[in-house]
Each structure stands twice: as C-alpha cells, then as structure tokens.
Image 1 (cartoon, rainbow, N blue to C red):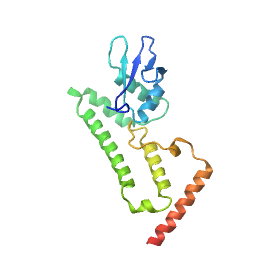
Image 2 (cartoon, one colour):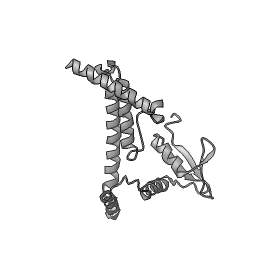
Image 3 (cartoon, rainbow, N blue to C red):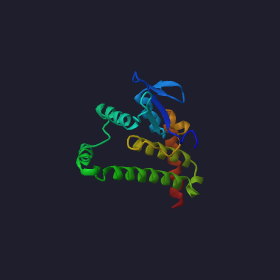
Length: 184
C-alpha cells in the first residue's frame, strides 16, 4: 500500500492536541480538513486509550464549517439525517449517502478520463487551458461535498490567476471558438 493510500495517522494526546505522525508536528482541525480535501484519508486515534476518534473529529469539522456560514448541508438534509437516527437500525440513510458519494466520485473520474482520452479536440490549441479550467471548476464545485478529488492539482490551480493569465485564457478561448466555427 503506497503512502498516499494509507490513512494519515493523527494521534490525540491527553492535552487534546493532535499530532501528525508523518511530519512529527501538531495539526489543527483546519489542517486535517485540508488533508481530506486533498484526497487523503485520515485516522485519529486517542494515544492513551487507543480509541478511534475519526468520526467524532470529522463531525466536528463539518459543524465548525456550518457554524461559520459555510452551509454545505441544507436544513432539509440535516432534518433527514436527524430523522434517520430515530429509525430502528438507523434506516437506509448511511448506505444511501455512501453510495451517492461513491457515484459522484466515479462520475468525476470518468468525466476527467473522457476529457483527456483520445479526443480529437486535444489537438486544438488552447484545449489544455480549457481542460484546466474545467478541472478547477469541478474541484471548486465539489470541494465542500466530497473529500476525495480524483484529479491532480496542477501548478496553475495552486496559484491564484493574475489578470494576464485570464486575458491569455480569454484569447485562447476566442481562438478555439474561431477554429470550432470553421470546422462547422
């Protein structure tokens, strides 16, 4: 199992501080949320008892984001979650949510594969910029919903784009539109 496939082990000390065992430093809940957004699985273990605290901390991350106004979960979904806890056996909600997120990740992955597969449009100048924009759009749209992103982050996605970069992209899009109209 590669380093990226193994869950990142975080140990919680008695002082409630969280310790990243890979980098040998302390981390915050925001750091853990960033690991997850980057596609890394985490496991949080209480150092003294050995209890797995992962679920508790993931729920705390969600609650903190919601309390800051980063409303990802609509009220009706939260109501349905609460109702599902009242049903004997927990109902079908956990399985439904897990299946839904798996389908979302698979769809993202297939869409990215289809975009880069032997596609004649890849020969058109400016297609790479369009593809990078599509990846950034999908990442922005799904970062609050899904913890796993199947596409790698490129250098252009990691840096904020300047107005020159945007002008260049607009120019490339205009050229692409002209070439597409000539093909029709």
